[in-house]
Length: 122
Image (cartoon, rainbow, N blue to C red):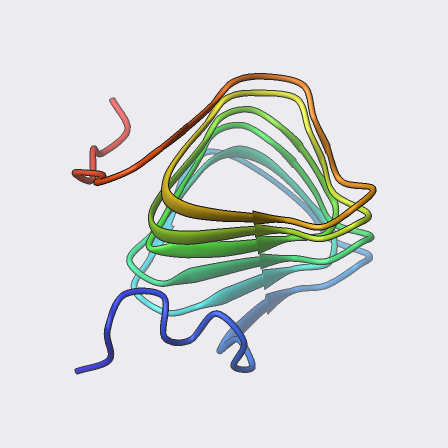
């Protein structure tokens, strides 16, 4: 079984394409996900979330790890590692074990790092 965050740089198994908008109160899954389009609602993954530069999430994100290059209007909770690419814009708070922030990334919120116990969305 892979360790938490091990697939952060591997190709995701599921994709929401650039031309798609998914609007749901709750989206969950056990495999990695790439969001090139728009998701409105909470995302809860037992894997890695990849948000491309064209991707937009309006809602909270719960994942083992995440690589963010697009915009998130909501809070991000990662058990393992969170990476904010230079094009990332996060309007919300971050809770994660470890975070990497590239120059140019924007965080409009608070960031708490350290040992994280996974909490599920309510």
